[in-house]
Length: 436
Image (cartoon, rainbow, N blue to C red; front, side, top):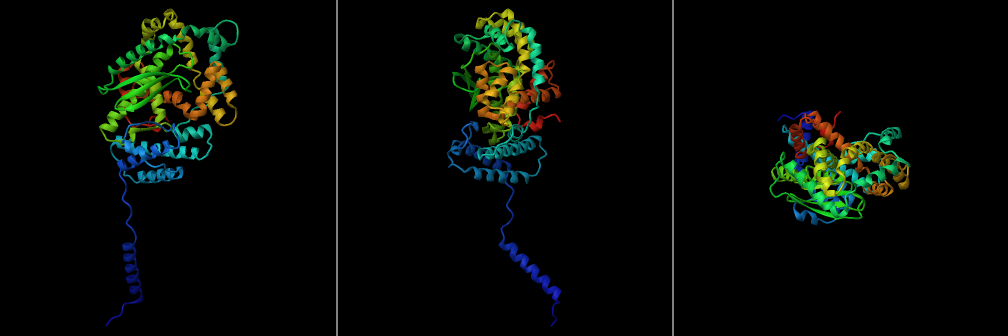
């Protein structure tokens, strides 16, 4: 008989060993579907809500998912990492919406991981935190930037005393009386709703209710309940000025938060079955889109001339305020709005440990023209929501830039509405609308 050479014997041995090892070791796990990852993501967000009562801003998915046992933070972080690894293995789709969906889940999960680190005691600088949670960093402005705006306000508010004192005295004439607040606010919501429905088709059963509340760190809030219903709360701790009627109606209602959530529920949750949009984690990149569109929505629903005409003819008379001063009022308020980024600077310094709460409030009084009570309320907001403040001003600027670059300029209202609606009803996040 013939004998095999040592080389052949070694080859046969290795082949047999490899076959046996393959039979004994488990097969590589199959890549999980995006839908399964989405369901796991929702449950992780709900698990985070058991540790952080502010984390889940809205949820209208399966009720049983809220009944899970409390999961340790470290376990939540591990599960988020696992889901991110699985997402990375999903083949890239040729469908743009599917691509956006995967990017959405990736960014939202990354932000969830960052929030876990914060709850575990990690301290992030203001810009590091906003990047980790909201996928964006707000620009920095020097004191000189705000001083230049304040200098432009000086001649518009003549008289004795400091500018803040003169500003507060001047605008007392524009406070909505408490007994007329609901009437004025309902008129503003009605107008914003009618103008929105002329451009955006909403589910026939969409609706909202309004509540007036106190002892809150914010001025207004939309609590989305699902099934196209919102509860809009208006905080009456501080005086409500006449410009806040449309601001709140548009931001919290039409075409802001209420419309945003209703379109996500209709187009993504119900029509596509994308369950991840049935939950809204507040400390996530989604918030920059939500707040940015809500703020920019004020300009979409009313052009500046339209707003001034409507307020002069309807809202100011309903509030019992002298409507002959509309132009004067907005000449001042338009400049005051340019001080908006002062809130970011106060928050940046405070959260970085450069100043304390009293100094942050003083900064807001000096550079944002807030009276003492409003400055303290704003500081409480910063303490509670931290770098979330960037979502209002930076978010608005990013949304405006995105829509205008796509043809939705102020002088092209129809295109502006089309682009605005498409953004509201999509999974786009800051990275998808950022101008590089």
